[in-house]
Structure formats: C-alpha cells, structure tokens
Image (cartoon, rainbow, N blue to C red; front, side, top):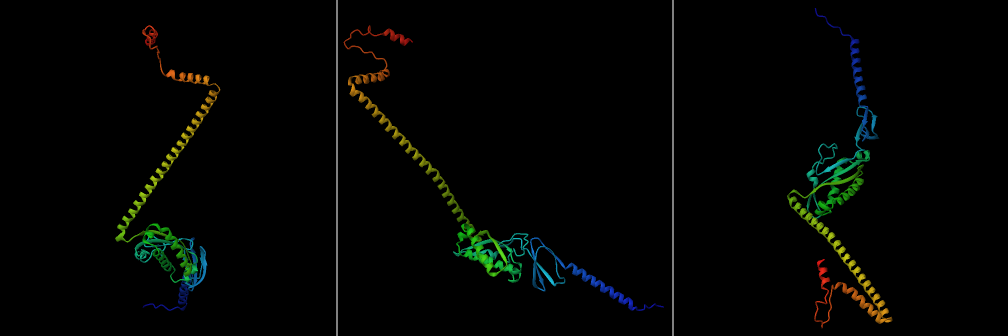
Length: 325
C-alpha cells in the first residue's frame, strides 16, 4: 500500500521565506558590488544619474547608487593623449589614436597644386570632462576632423618644396595655432599641446625623381659650402700677406728715412769741421779712407819706374819665410 505525503502549509511557507531571503541576499550582494568604484590616479570620473550629469570626482575610491541609477565615465584628464594621422603605432592604448583611413588622411594637395603625403601627430589633454562629454556628440572624431582640416588648410597655403623641405617648423606652428582656435570655437573641452610633423614625402610614382632633385640640391649646397670654406681660408690669408707686405714696406721706408737723416747729420757735422779747418779735415778724411781701404787691398809693392835692378831691393827672404810658415 503506497504512502501518500500529506501537504503541509507550514513547510510551504518556510520554503517561500527561504527563497525570498536568498533573493534578498543576492540583491544585497549585487548592490554592494556595484555601489563602489575606483578612479585611477591619472583620470577623473564623471558621474551620471539616469544619464544626466551629476558630478566630477577625483581619483580614489567612491560610492554610487547601484543597479544603473548612477553611472561613471572615466576620462584620462591628467595624461597627455595623442592622435596619429596617416600612420599608426602598434600596441596603442588610446582608442581614438588611430583614424579610420590613414591613407586618405595623409594625401594632400599643396598650394602649387602638387600632391604630398603628410603624416603628423596631435598631442592633447582633456581639460573639461563635462564639456568633453556633453557639448559635442563625438568629441574624439570631431577633434580628428578639426586636426585634418587645419593641416590641409596650412599645407594648401604652401608650395611642395616648403612642405617637404624647409617649411616643416613653420607648418607645425601654423597648424597648432589654427587647431587651437578651432578647438576653442567648438568648445571641445580639450587643450592641444603640440602638432608634430612626421614623414612628409611626395607620392610614390614621383618619389624617385624628387629624391634626385633633393640630392642635386644637397650637392649644390655642399659645393657652395666648400667654396665658401675655401674663400674664407684664402681671403684672410691673402689679406694677412698683404698686411704683412705693407708693414714690411713701412718698416723699410722708416729705415731708409732714418739712415738718410743719419747720413745728412754726419755730413753736416763733417762739413762744419771742414769749414773751420779745411786742410786738417781733408787730411783726416784722406787718412781715414786709406785706413779703411788699404787693409782690404792686401800686400802691395811700389817701385820707381826708373829702377833697373829690382831683385836686390825686394825683401824676398822675408816673403819666402812667410810662405814657408
């Protein structure tokens, strides 16, 4: 005979109460887990209550209403972000760093109707989280569009040579200034810190020809620099030699003048003595002249032209003795 279990209302109530307590505990645990959040050190949190802005909180541990009543958007306001145009760096962390079409972004037309491939980087910071989230529908894409518009405007005002060679720094400054004006006008809530050009090249089909032109220009500049170097070496050397010759001529001139003045003074002194005693002065000059000339003339033998027997007269013995010595 089968035993039929008798329904007990008390047991049924106890079961319902246990289930109710379990559901309540589950919701309490779930609310406890979703009632707190943490903001990283380099970020700020924007608290939204039912989708409406409530507050901006600093880094740290905070609490909020659970079950989606309060939501938090974390923005890296204390870290410099960047956007890359025409290229991308692998393993990037900023989701807005890479554009949808890098090849289209870098293709530009210069002011002289030439094509150029321009790659650049925009570095920015989020200044006002509330303005960044609520004043513009898609702030990151809007900033990309403004950056591209500013760069195309600046590149379109310059020739291809300026864009690729000598005008890089000027383009960076002009693009930064124009982008800052647009960001302020659109109230994006960001601050643009820097616009930096990366690779700027002509299109691929003409790149080889452009490289040859650049090489020719570099060779020309190199030859000009070498010529200027030779000029800077030769001209100062020639000027130094000319200055030295002038100084030597000046010295020789002063020397000749001083010698002439000395000779005039000596002649005047002799003339003064000659006027006082002509015979004595004449004899003194004669003797002084002989004293200066005769030692250089060597030994001289003077004989009378009427002398017949010359040998006994000559001091040959003394001469021979001197030759022996």
